[in-house]
Length: 160
Image 1 (cartoon, helix red, strand yellow):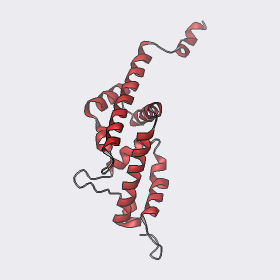
Image 2 (cartoon, one colour):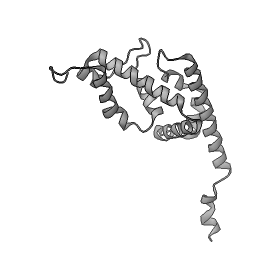
Image 3 (tube, helix red, strand yellow):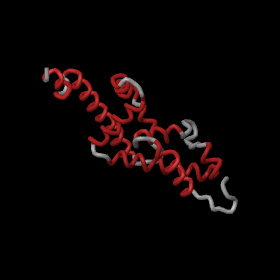
Image 4 (cartoon, helix red, strand yellow):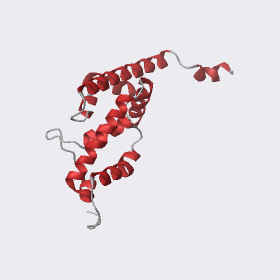
């Protein structure tokens, strides 16, 4: 751990997590997915070696659980257009083809495992419904952009 004389609290671990790790992730949806990946699927316990070494297992787990819930509730509160933007950013950083990404997420619904434990079930349903709707908006926009190129992409042709 850090300084033996320094009081180690979950707040210290939470602040460290925010500043060193989460601030480098470009959107809340990606942060949510990252935090979910630190949770063991069998036990529900969170793991993060760097934080464990500095703050111990209990402070680390409390910090990861709190950050996971905070980001989840922020995402649930987003207006649809902002959630669509979050999803669009996540699709871009995934480096997957958008069509394949959207299809896979619609079929497998991997966002379901990104939900924190012990959150309000109505909020879980709202989150999942909003993600499904945002995926549909992205799918529609992608199909629409292929079928009808934007006026800006036609400008070079019109200038000739």
